[in-house]
Length: 393
Image (cartoon, rainbow, N blue to C red; front, top):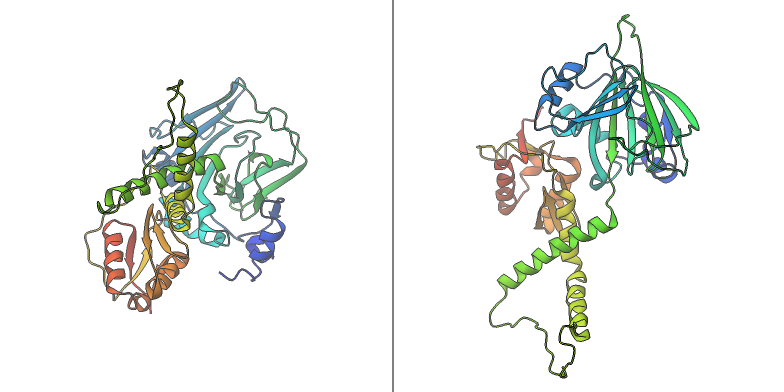
């Protein structure tokens, strides 16, 4: 993607300008971000996804006595009547199950892939919404059809209501208000309070239009959680290193030749604490190990994601593309894919980085792969992580 090319998606800004001026800083309203946009899935298809136990979904209903939430999957008659106002169906990770949704996300790849979470679709009857709330991540709210009224606020008071199944703000005070119609989009940075309510809308054909909003969310790691995951992964690396160590090379062991007789035997010796600190420091100071652990963590797919194995040989006469659910990234020394890491260098590293950035390789590019790279790609194809694609002339 040319990050210096003006984009209608960003109201005529280049991706570089948007990232400098708005990303994690302030909202951006874009009228006609995707002109003549039409939903990628019909209401019926979206509801079918909510019936599937492989898809994460939620039903949120606003009643006079309060909010109600129920997690999917739902029975075919488990959703409220279309005539009932004030209810919302949320379907997560639509991009993992629909190629058109995955293709839509390509337009947002001016942000590093490591930040992209998923595409969530919200379908609502008039009056439907999830209440005033804030998100801990960046989000682009694209109106796919119908109409939704957004109220937003940069308020500092983020106190939540108690005793409700949703994280709803207790003291929401709107500062700005917008009505989004099909093709319009609103970007909101993290912790920006907002409330979106579906409104009745009649289309050009005189029929009521469904209110569907696509949320393109960008997650951000939490420092403590990331540290815990990294330390766990690095500990696994250390265990592997111990198992693979040569018996001729002794491991570094704690020694306490200077330990004196102690009247407090239950007390941890200071020398052991110092030894432990040095051991952890030795693990953390290896930049390759830390980078490898980080890449594996960031490409690990969600628990509900699965791949269909493929019994076919890789053909150099065809191109290849990543499966919509596959997460592939790289650093200066590794290629990462779906939680696994591979050391890479030379021409193969260049090829694999191109594959990760473009999410596809032509037959011509594939012809430059080494035997080892082709063997690896064959394994990925068998696992269902990549697919052969016919190229049009």
